[in-house]
Image (cartoon, rainbow, N blue to C red; front, side, top):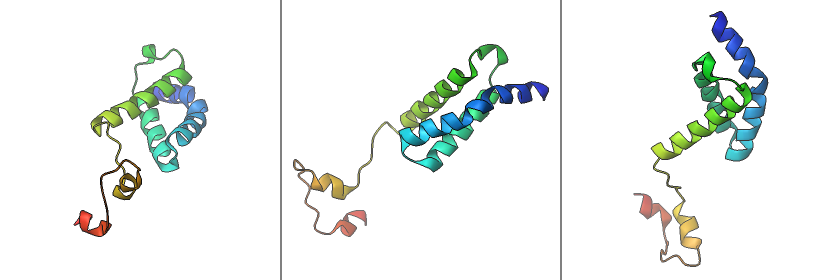
Length: 102
């Protein structure tokens, strides 16, 4: 337990920085909070010998988690149909968007 506590002390000074960085990058505070929490937990499970620079390790772990999530989701960005239809090159004509959802 003491080892985990000392490890936490190495990461905690950078937690708020991580949260601010990912809030800005994701544009979504709740998603950044989830990511920061998951990142801290993953870092606390890491082998002490693998962590030489806690700040860099914390940020790299967050990047890796975002990449993993992106891959799991198929790496495809989803756009609402009205945005697609509004694009000048779109071949979609939406007269009643609710029908497309049913």
